[in-house]
Length: 547
Ligand code: F6P
Image (cartoon, rainbow, N blue to C red; front, side, top):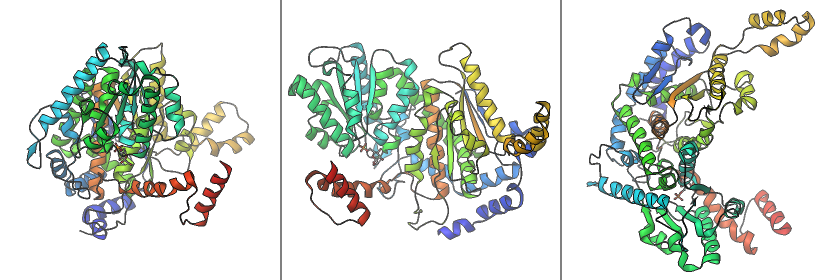
């Protein structure tokens, strides 16, 4: 099927017609005249403690049916089964996509190239358990015999964002070890971390699937030199471990093979927090909590694979995103967790969604003629309310939002949680229903405004509403529910990739910048010259002559 044909399919055409004729102009105020709307458009799963309310979306029963028809036609379930059974669905890199097998708590065999990969996964998990238990118990010590109190994860992209987000999210459960994350090649990042640390009590985790990433290797070399300068060469073995798929490069770097925690080609970087890349999480909150994280994700894997489309949360999230992206022309999507602990969640999802679905070539290797992955952004509530929510409510952009909230706080502090959650509920209500001209006039009258003031103010105080939101309401923030939440988004991204008929698992788009930086680096270091456009050439000239 070519691109043109996808847009010409009856499923797409039906949605387009439905949008043009019915949904383009409908308002959530009218849709909510149906009193059964919440029951019709929400899914609750008491086993994991998640309610997904999607009733505040610009859909009716017909929209939902047409979106489900589209998803069925796209054969999401068939593709999902291909993924979890180890088929090489990442066709441009000829790789299987098996982050799900890392959390396969059933332990049933899963084969890649005819070989069951569960034994190797279990072996690495055991090694992670032993190492993190020893470290946390003070049995794994530094070179001078001192207990390790600080762990520094050196990695970037998927080797940083996932573990960092999880450590921040579950920080309440941390106890005996501090974690730090160094990712940026800007020397400021490692400088600011190292200046607080004592080499005798610091362990470096060098996290890189390829072990060739410029940022990570540069930071790792700086960390190694810092340690050697203070404790000598022999200390490296006590203070450096590696997480990688590249044994050769790890050894070349000078890290003992016994101190390497392996993962494999079938684990994509942005899906790797469930693998050895989660070692910093184990050190920080303990291996048992890491297993809970895996269990939560496994639970959602089963939900995704076995639940009918109509009740399947990731599929519903995906088709709603598709609906706005491809029919309402929404180009961004905000993710707004009402939890300070999730303050890195949007940053993590940016890689998960945008590196996965920021693509323009389809299943047949043709250029596509429709929109794919949206821009993902967000900040925790209520902070966002005091910065960008003005635009969400009254700006000219159409921005669907996900609101994530918790029923019980991890730690009760006075009445903070009720106040936080009052805002969580209020915002989706305000976005959906707004404030009409009549309501504004009535409010101004009641407040005693003059007719002149009312003339000026009325338009400014109207909220159009009709701004769609999903509400994800979770019992409490635990390792298990966090694992589940992350997996919901992973499978949403997967589903959208299939809908858009793209490869969600490669990332060729990050290559060109890396190649050009390697060309430019010697020009900055020793003044050598390469041909560039006049803008780049002059910028480099100014840099070199003023440094
Ligand atoms: O450049 C993008 C990328 O390849 C990501 O996909 C990946 O998560 C990141 O770089 C880090 O890669 P590595 O773990 O190999 O250092």
